[in-house]
Length: 351
Image (cartoon, rainbow, N blue to C red; front, side, top):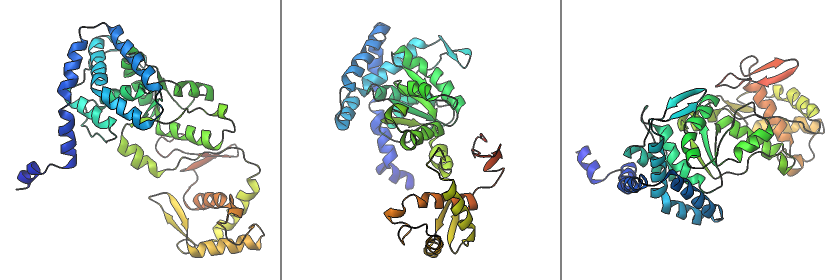
């Protein structure tokens, strides 16, 4: 009965896949026509599209234009893969034979990603190749595309491996890794397509928006379209751990010392609640009253309410002190080297 009903009333995912599948034959037909033209024709198409779409400022108009050329753009990528077939691609210091041409199911996966969906694929079904289809299409916007991976190795490998397609078609490819200086990062972000890890992208965002005092000190150029690899790991597992960055401030030492002295006087479960799974600490109403009383007694509050605009900035020191006191353990979450506190990355173990 359930099987019968599912055929009568397919779920949303099944309807989407069925709709996208109807477009596959058109893509394949266009790709067959491209097999008779010169490779220069593909590169010329890329440049013509890029010049046309880079001039579009309205997001809605750009989205419509990209949707209109999706079948032909996907056909161009598939044809580029066909032309690369059996050629050597230099990846991580080794020459490997290119042996991938997108299957129909991969074309469907590429369309699903372009429309903002999560595409779940089994190991070996070629999700890395699937991503090249919507990445190429959206890179034609001239606004830059980010591919987010789980580690530096995969970011570098895929930027070289899949980069063979993009460079063949006339697009530029960049890769962000942890030991790059700001000038190198800025250059990589200015490429049509940029690979990197979630933490590298995240820290660059924090530096640009919280520490860079001038526009020329910023490295990222904007945010338009991104593909997230291993989305469950990056947006669920690793999202539990906040990105922490520090830099020079006016003279925060005294404020940190004050809150480091006051926070241990607060009582767990009564003044504050620790959420280990979410890696967060939240004051209760009782805790807020107690910390306000302590700060008022020491003359540190400019108004009675801790969260008034006049006291802006104090809450940052309070939250940091609460987390340091309740969540971070020495030689597990951080280490002390040469008198400096260094955070340990939970997933990579990197300092």
